[in-house]
Each structure stands twice: as C-alpha cells, then as structure tokens.
Length: 286
Length: 323
Image (tube, rainbow over all chains, first blue to last red; front, side, top):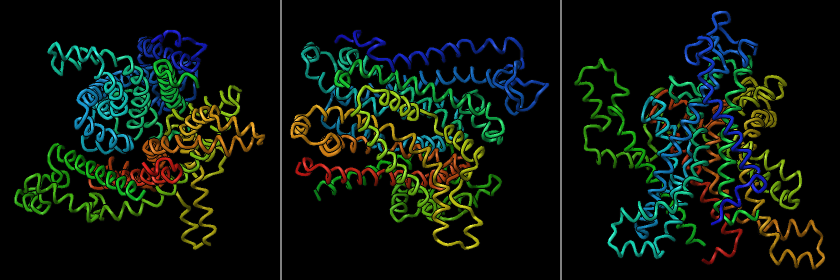
C-alpha cells in the first residue's frame, strides 16, 4: 500500500490542521513547569496570589486571570494539558491493546468464539458511554486519576475490536498464516507474531479516535465531580468554576479550560479522520 | 418482516439480560456489601444480621442473583437510600422530561443533518461545504457541558432571552395558567437544551448524508433522470436524496448511544429534571439502587430506540424485507 502519497497537506488539509493543534498542546505541556519556577504564586495546585485571593480579570501578573482562591488560571491550564495528554495516551493505548487482542482472537478462531465476542461488542456499542462510566465508577468508589484512565481504557475497546476482527478474518486464510500453522506454530504464536504486526497500523489509526473519546470522558467525569480531586485537569477547573458559582461572574475562568478540551478533542478527531482516509482507500474519493 | 422484528426484540431482551447480570456482579464486587452502605456502623451485630437477612444477603450469591432478576422483572428496583421511595416511582416520574428532550433533539438533528448533508454534497467543493464541515466537526467534538454553560451565559445571563434551567416556571403552574401558557412555558425552557444537543449531534448525520449522496449522484439512475430532462430540484430531492438516505438510518442507530450520553450531560448542565440528572445526582450521593435503576432506564430507552430505527429501516428499504 502506498500510504505516503496520501500523507500530504494538499490531500489532507484537515488532518494537518489537527496535527498542528496537537503540537501546540504538546508544547504547552512541555512548557508547563516554567511558570511555577518563576514564582510560587503560579503553582498550579497550591499557588494563590496573596494580594488577590479571589477571582480577578486577566492582568499582566495573571495573563488569564485568577480562580476563586487567587490561583493562576494560565498555569492550571498548562498543567491541565499534561493531564489531558497523559489520559489520551494511556487510555487510548489500553483500549487499543485490548481491542486489538480481542479482535484478533475473534477473527482468528472465528465461529463460536467470534460470535460470542461480537455479541458482547454489540452490547457495549449500544450502551451510552457516559451513563455507563457513571454507574461503573459509582460502584468502584472514589478513583485516582490512574483509576479513571484505566476505567476509560477498559470501556473503549469495542469499536477497535470490530475493525481489527474484520481484518483478522481475512488474514487467517492467507498463505503465510497457513504455512506458519504447517510449521507447527501454536495459536498464541500465530496471533502475536504473525497476525498482530499486520493489523498494528490500523490499530494506531483508531488510537487517535479513541484518544478523543478518552479526553472527553475524563473531562466529563471530572466536571460531574467524579474525577480525581488531587489532579489539575481541565474538567476539574470547569467543575470548580461551576460549583463556586463563578460561571457567569468570572467567564475568563470558565472559557479557557472548555476551549482547551474542545480544541484537543477536535485535533485528535481530525487526525483520526485524516489517517482513516490514508489507510482506508474507500474513503479517498470523497 | 414479523419474524425479523421478533428476532430483534429477542436480541434486545438478551442484551438487557447481559446488562442486568453485569450490573449485579459489578455492585457485588464493591468493598463490603450493599447493606454495609446503609447500615449505621454503631448498630449492634444482631440487628445487622437481621437486616442482612431481610436484604437476603445471607444467602448464596447465585440465589441472590435469581432474586434480583425476579425483582427487576416485576419492576422492583428497591428503594432509594436518600428518600426511601421506590426507585421505579422516582425514575418513571423523570422519564417524560428525558423523552421530550431526547426525541426532539434526535429528530431535529437528524432532519437538519440530512438537509445540510444533501445541500453540501450537491454543491461539492464550494465554500459552503468547507464551512459546514468545519462548523459541524467543531460542534461534534466540543466539550458539551462547557458549550452548555457558554450558551446559558450568552442567551440566559447576558441577553435574558431564556430561563437559566429547569423545565417549567413553578409560579405559573401553581397559579393554574391555561394549558396553552403551560406548553409555551415548557417550550421556552426546552429551547436552549435542545439547541445545545442538536448542535452537537447534527454533524454525524450530515457527514454520512454527504458521502452517501456523493455516491448516489454517480449512479446511472441519476444520469438518466437528468437525461429525461427532469428539473435539478427533482433529481436532487426525489432521485438522489431518497436513495442516499438509507446508510443514514444505519448510522442513526449507531449514534443513538452517543446522543444519550450527550443527553445526560445536557440535562445535568441545564438542571433538566430527567433520568440523566437523576443518575448523576444518585451517583454523587452514592445512592446505588437509584443509580442502577436510572442507568437501566436509560439503557432501555436507547435499546427501544434502536429497535424502532431498525424497524423503520426495514419499512424504508424493501430490499431488506425479504432477506
């Protein structure tokens, strides 16, 4: 497959727009530790400006204003980028790993195993994710940020499993799999050594779309008050703003985190769509 | 066709059974058992034992599971920890508000997405297509609670055109206004949540309609319709768009879960008194029976909508009927 030809700005302007936005957020996450080094009032967790101690309009001292306790919004926003990217990478990697494995197993064994696993996928895809995450996290109790990330990762695999399974179904009849079997390779070895490498590029494409969902879910959980209260995240910032009744009185506190979540989701979605066009020839014509 | 519908209903019941089973074992996995959540730790052990027996918690897990299934089948979801009222009564009270918002938003976004998708496929490559795609995708990925707050801030707080939240003005209903005035009041409250949910959802159907329409426009029957000398409007609406609609119904079924997720968040931001708000509140208050009941009801709404969409698909496309 000649993929490189389709990886150009002219053919895929939206995908590159997404990559550009993502790059900005990565820079933001890398530069985040600079502000707290300048002065301890910029510490994203404990920092508060002793001269303000409340919400304040953006100024030279606080470029995006301060929150209800005099904490710097910009510094929190930059640290939020770290949390969001961490959530995106870890949760998406978890989902992709589980989804690829289940898809490969279903496609390789076909028959009953395939039928059962795909029914499970159907059930999970019919269920709305937000209520599902809510009810599961209520059963699990207060979660740390890692708990939230794993929970999201463990619920996000069905879509990927379905795509990988379709690939695996066609792979299992190819000659190289047949010959591996003839050489006496076991099922596990065939799945991991011979089939997995062929589907990995496809899995990575879907990682981008999963990352978009993971960021949204983590932010939504935090916003609803079920996130990790010890983490600086954009969803938490919004929740504090909403909870302390500052949504309308301090819009400079409400606007940046929501915009950041939306922009990052937007960028991952565009990248995912763009990559989908690259590996999925059927979509190119449109 | 009757066979097909029966099979779909059977599948749905099977799905519900899987959900129920997973829910049961999920909540039994919790540290401690359900009784220890309600019980006062200072209670004497004998009283605790009596209560556990009353809840059936001294029996084997499998017996408990059967009891649970039996109770759910009879519509008995237990009582809310907070208000001690039966869960089923609370959630059924909240159902109409959710159905109102969910169905209007689904129908409106579907119609809007179809219409815009048709239009931008027809005028392919123009500035309209690019702006609609970008706008649609931005709404599709916007962080819904934040977008809701933004809309409330602009239209309710600054402009004061719409109420801040809720579903009705209590004073109006106490004083006994006319049915007409009450309906207008509810619509007035519905406007903003509907706007938010529709904006977030329409892009999905818009993009599917666009690509499906582009495919249809290359079909021979569109060429022959043009060759017959039919007006462009009739070719677009009668010959191309009708056939392009079919993939849209499939994607619509898949998007129902997404819409319901959005619905829960919208309800929560607008304090819309629906099942979603109830679910969020129950989860926050660790009211497990209520949370389970609200989740089940939401799942049932989505599953029923799924079956309805599938049946609609069979009615729309005669090619499927005889398979």
